[in-house]
Amino acid sequence: MTHRLTTLWPMIRLFHALIALALSGLAATASAQAQDERPVVIELYTSEGCSSCPPADALLFDLRQRPGVIALAFHVDYWDYLGWKDRFALHEFTMRQRAYARALGSPMVYTPQIVVDGAAHVVGSNRAAVDGAIEEARANDHLLDIGLSWAADDSLLISIPAADYDGKATIWFVRYAEGDETEVAAGENAGRLLKHANIVEEIAAIGMWDGRAMVINLPREAIARGHGDEAFGCAVLIQPEGLGPILAAREIDWAF
Image (cartoon, rainbow, N blue to C red):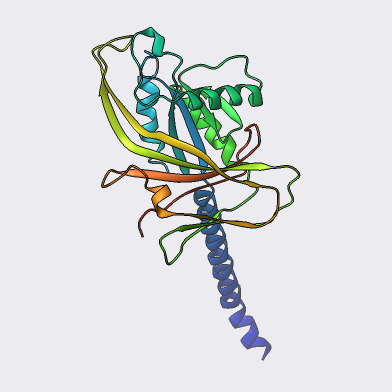
């Protein structure tokens, strides 16, 4: 009997090693999947009237292809006076950027500016700085996971779980056009063809969250408003009142 155990022991150790290796691989895969599922939100503040913005607009095309990144372009209106009115700009986007300046302790707003996960800002055309800010954001877990499901009437059910949170947070619905371009005829970019990715058309507060579990029903018509066959995307963000670090984020899968 002793002889048989001695003979089998190397096989047993090999079996245990293979199990440990398999479990390690599964853990690594689960960790990678969790990282992919935890999106980092990129908000580019840009303008067609800003000569420094086209490189940042081009970078956003790359950022939106990355797994686990929600890339959004907010066009601001404070450069319109330079001779070209940005047709995608909304004053509420300018106000959102100014709210970020207050929340992040920045003395000014500027373009191109990228705000990463509501917690840090960098020059939007500085690829190295943007990459570094994304990696830092990935190291921080979101407080919540947002659940999305489609009801029988094609409305979207947004489920937010309970969590230990002291305060109130805004639930934002964001809709964006996947792409468009403009031939600029005046201003700093006169004569240029500008191409844009993930142009935010609307950001609307659809509820407030105070730490208690809740469900929001969003009609299909509200999600697809103004779009027929045009390519567009949507996302849900949750942030403290007054803006600040994003507590949760989720892109909406429109394929249903």
